[in-house]
Length: 472
Image (cartoon, rainbow, N blue to C red):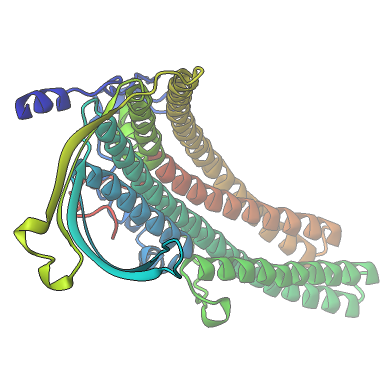
C-alpha cells in the first residue's frame, strides 16, 4: 500500500511551468551594434547583488546617502516586511506535506435523574475521564499541495523582486533629487557671480551718468537687470529647500534634522555600459517579479485541476477512557481507531470548471504582463540612451554658445565704456550670456538625470556577486 501511495504522490496534475518567450532584439537601436557585447542567452540573475552603482559618479556624499536607503527608507522597509510575509505563507503551505498530531484530555462529572412509579426517584452521579493522541495526514496524491507550495514560493520570489525594485526606485529617486539639488547650487553660484558683475556694470553706468556720458534710462536698465537677477537668486533657495527635504525623507530622517552643504559643483556624467537587451532579464527586478508571478499563476492551474480528483485522508487515534481517574491508563480501558476516508465532489454545477478557466485566464494575463514589462524595459533603455546621446551633442554646441556669448558680453561692455554703443546693447549681451550659461547648466543636470534613469532602466549596477540572502 505504501508503494502505491508513493507512486500516486509522484504525479502532479496541471501544466509544468516553462517561461514563455518575449519579444527581444539582439542590440539597442540607440547604441552602435559594433560597440555592444555579443548577444548571448539570458541567465536568471535578478537575485544577484547589483553593487553600489552610484559609485560611478565619484561623489562621497552621494555614496553615503544612498547607502542609508536600505537601512532607513520606510517604503523599502514595508516591501521587506511584505517579503517576509510571503516567505511565511510559503512555509505554512509546506507544512501541509506532514501529518497533523493532536493530544486531547478531558474529565467530566455528570448527574442523571431516574424516577420510579410511586417514588420521587433517585439521582445518579458519574465521572468520566479520557485522553487520546490522534493523527491525520492527507497524501498529496494529485499534487495539489505541491502546486500550492510551488505557487507560494514563486510569489515569495516575486515579493523579493518587488523589494529589489522598491530599493532601486528609492535609490534612483534620491540620486535624481541629489543632482537636481546640486544643479540649484551651481545655478546659485552662477547667479551670484552674475549679480556681482551686474553690480559692477551698474556702478559703471552711474559713473557714466554722473559724468554726463550716459542717460538716466541706462542707470534704470542696469538697476532693473540687477534686481531681476537677485530675484532669481532668491527663488533658487525655495527649490533647493524642497529637494533637501525630499532627500531627508528618502533616507528616513526628519527634514529639520538634515542638511546638505553647498558645493556648487555638478558631477560629470560617467560612461554607462548598456550591454545587450537580453541582460535586462537578469538585471531588472520588475521583469523578475512579472516572471515569478507567471510561475505562481501557472501553479494555480494545477491546484484548480486537482479539485477534480478525490482526496484521501488517513487518520488514527489511540487513547484511554474510564470512569475513575486512577484506572484511566489501564490496558483494559484502551480505545483506538484507524482508517482512511475518501472524498470526491460528484456534482458542483460547473464550479470546478469555472475555477480552472479562471486560473488559466489569470496565467494568460500574467504572460501578457510579463511580455509588456520586457517591452517597456527595452523602451526605457532606448529612450534614455537617445536622451543621453542627444544631450551630449547639445552640450557640445551649447558650450560653444556660452564661450561666444561671454566674449560678446566682454566686447560690448568695453565698447560701452568707450562710448561707442548704447547701454541696451550691454543689457542684451549680458542677458544672452546669462541665458546661455543657465541653459548649459540645465543640460548638464538633464544629462545626469538621464544617466540615473538609464541605470534604473538597466536594473541597477553591473557587479555580479552572489548574495547570501535576498533581504539585507
